[in-house]
Length: 140
Image (cartoon, rainbow, N blue to C red):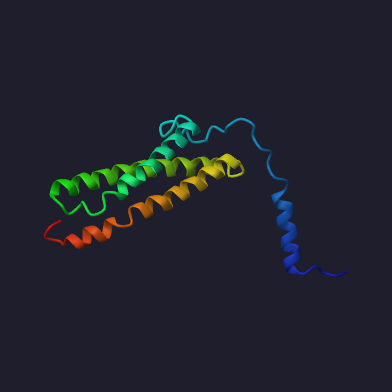
């Protein structure tokens, strides 16, 4: 009798232990996140994403204004902070829906759109830190 090499035996035992994949549930499991506090629907998420995209030029237009006065610094940073909150809300919703069922094409697309938005958002605000640093500690 010939013995199987150890790796083959381990692979076979693992395959037998795992068995067949579980059936996909047609109805949501009770442990699925309730994301309605973030957005009531995927359509609402999409509207919010488009609105933030439309606001990116306004944020980029703040470049060069932060050092004009304390008031302009405060207003600029408040606008950036509010936009960042909107972005994070979009990102979390997309991430959580994708985590719920990564096989769903709409969830995958939403995750990709959130990633793309993150790149555009970061690009629109890449000037903020250098501008604040250039103001100097005394002025800030």
